Image 1 (cartoon, helix red, strand yellow):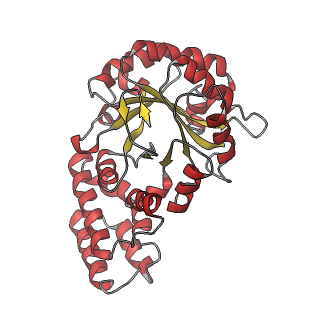
Image 2 (spheres, rainbow, N blue to C red):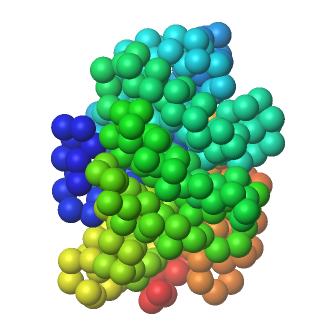
Length: 328
C-alpha cells in the first residue's frame, strides 16, 4: 500500500489518532512493537494559528516514530491553510484531515463529522487544502451521519477527486459515537467500487489478530487502523503481524516486559509533557496492561491515585514481584 510515494508494504497497520493518547511517547512504543505508521492526536487549526501551547506541542515528532501523520481539524478554510504552514515545519509524512470526530463541541462548530452532512462542501474544502500543500493529504471519517444517511461511498469518491491519497474509515456513524458495532461491510463497499483507486483503510473494533485477518482476507481492505485496542496493549501490532504472516499467535508478553514498556512510556512522557500531565494521562493505559491478572484491581487503584513518579515505579516493581511466576 502506498500513500503518495510512501510505501507501507502489504496490509499495513496504523495507530489511530486519539486525543490524550496518541502522544509521541506512545506512538514511539507502538512503532517499536509493529505499527507501520502512527498518527498524532487531532490538532485544532484554530489553536495552531493562535500559538496555543498544547496545539503547538502536539506537532512534535520523534525520529523513532516515523512515518507519522499529523491530523488536523477545523471548519474555517483560511485557518486550515494558515495552519498548514506551521505543520509543514514539522515535516510530517502525511497530513490527515479529521472528518470523523463525533463530539458535540467539535461538530457544533461545523468541524469533524459535521462535514458528512454536506459532501459537496467537504470536497471543495478538501481540494483547497490539497492545493495548498505539497505534503500527501489523507482523511479520516465515518460511514455517515446516522443510520439513515450512510453516504461513505459518495464521500470517499469525492475525496479521491479532491486529491487525497488514502481514506481511513471508522465503521460507525456520527450518531453511534463509539457505541454499537462497527460496520465493516460499508467500508468494503467503498473499496469494491469500480472507480475507487486510492487505498481504503478500516477502523473500528479491530482489536484482535483474527479481526485484522478478516479485514484483510474477507473484506479485501488495504490496511487496518487500531485505536482503543492499542491502549494498554501497544504490542497488539506485533501480534497482528505475526498472526497475519503465520496464522499462529505470539505468546503474551510476561509481566517483566509489560512493566518495562510502561516505564519507558512514563519516562518519555514525563520528559515530553511534564510530571503532572504525564501521570494523569498515563492512568487510562494501566487497565489494559494487566487485564486478566488475578487480584490486580488493588494495584490498579494505587496506580491511578499515585501522584509522584517514584511512587508509580515502586508500585510497578511490586506488581512485577507479585506476578513474577504468573503465566498469562
